Image (cartoon, rainbow over all chains, first blue to last red; front, side):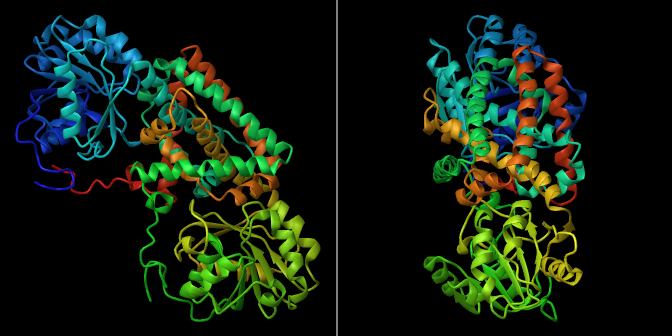
Length: 318
Length: 318
């Protein structure tokens, strides 16, 4: 089925791919793995009976189970698609089932903590290649997934020193097969980069939506009605999965607090410029930030359409 | 030309509509006024020869001029579409040309300051009906405008006590003709509502993009590459017109500082929860903010499509 995702691979990267956790990311991986022939067989493992039922109905996998150790037996690749706070628990639960030579990976938004949690549970001869696809939407669950989620997005691999290079190469092939660009960096550097490009933006968005909800002088219905002035943009991010994001902040504390400190410092400077009527300082700051938007659009990481293309301009010419 | 904007009016609301400032908002008004027959004739007034030239080429008006007093003579409605900081100067420049019974309006994002600037220059017999369409994109200039910009968006009128009720009714008819829902409130209440739904979100977005640009440990190219983790959303708003936004903050200082104080207080509470590992506090906060997003989608003020519909899901079903 040739389409914008490209033709399926002639030979799958993995024989049996086990996905643990079939939420937005796990179910999107199941979809793209099948569509692009990234694995000959897909095993879906989820602790929730409701999720397993949906996965069956959506026909996302060859085998669906709630038993991690059973599900991973015979898998040559296992990807943890669970909140970062439970990666250690899941790794422990499945360790008796792992076969020699298997590759374990994950999709967590924090890497240092995941490495620390998973490594103690790795049997000899099993390779761990941590990964983070920088992709997602504000929706959750197996119905929210779609095959093109990773297309033209970046996936960051953070293999610890000494990781088997063949295992790293296979995970790279897998993500490239899913349509992603792949980059490697160390776990601490990943956690710093994502603290500013993802974690802090989410914290700020969650915060401003909370502030708006608590006002007495402005009603909730006014906040909602007049949200097109900018506020609605923040509500999208602030609708993301609470469990996932709680775990991100608990597991990337140092980098998030560091970035938050800088953000607050800079905000104080803008606040001071407003209080003292320093129009030049405001104008200079607001001019500087335009260039970054242009660069993001140029490298294809966002749409050039105004307002994210929410309101199509077609037929608007006179 | 029947389309999603609806049929043109049988009788225009105004005979001669003068638009002062043909940027995103002014040029969108020119387009929708012609498309929906909101005015029999459109006069475009702009201080910039470059803008006037584009307006001529785009054929947005019946008459184009750089002389405010000449342009407004014989107009029965004049709408100021300039940054809020220059509304007083523009009102003064055109006052000798105004005819008796004319209605002056504006589109400024701040109302208290605009009323204070314009009122001293109003000749007797001229009505002032301040207005603020809560609509826009991050783009600027006469080419960025489009006729459906105000469709299904709110326009807030803030007529001072004692304003001629017929003038208010005509401005309401004009905005309804442009596709907007109309609400009335006082200037101070408007300025408080918009401080939280528009001004603070812009300040926060400008700020985080500045913070990211200044990091030493994370390169600019990393910030740009991995922006799909949430950061890119903020860059859209932070690409808005610097002059317009400088003036908004200088002219709505008190309300913005009040909202900023609350925002910072709330952010400190989240920061403390992260530092002390209070997962329950984070989870509760992140759960509460989901409901507001749902309400905004339900009343049609944003798209229900994941990720604002940037990445279409069509053809993704297996």
